[in-house]
Amino acid sequence: QVQLVESGGGLVQPGGSLRLSCAASGSIFRINVMGWYRQAPGKQRELVSVITNGGSTNYADSVKGRSTISRDNAKNTVYLQMNNLKPEDTAVYYCNTRVATTRGVEVVYWGQGTQVTVSS
Image (cartoon, rainbow, N blue to C red; front, top):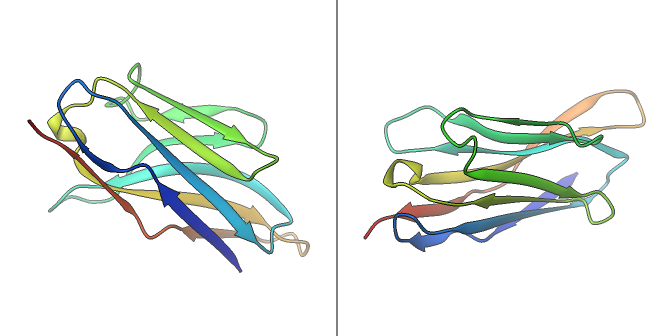
């Protein structure tokens, strides 16, 4: 089993910044991908950004240019720096990781979510 601990959410004014962190622990052979998804009230969960073990990144168009994802492989931790936040960024942000097992299977894990609210 793998546990994901998220931190960094909160209330921020429009134009402000937040840094989300997610640390993975437990039975980890290799983490292939780490990233963030979000879900706003009444909407489907959507990808925000992901980063591979090799450092390749992908961003949703809605956050591109305003967000930076990074990863500390030694700490099994992923970070999401979000700048110039907008009210439409308000959502529960979920950490996601895809972990390779020694049997060659990839298992997906989700964090419990952290609330980000952008409001004046």
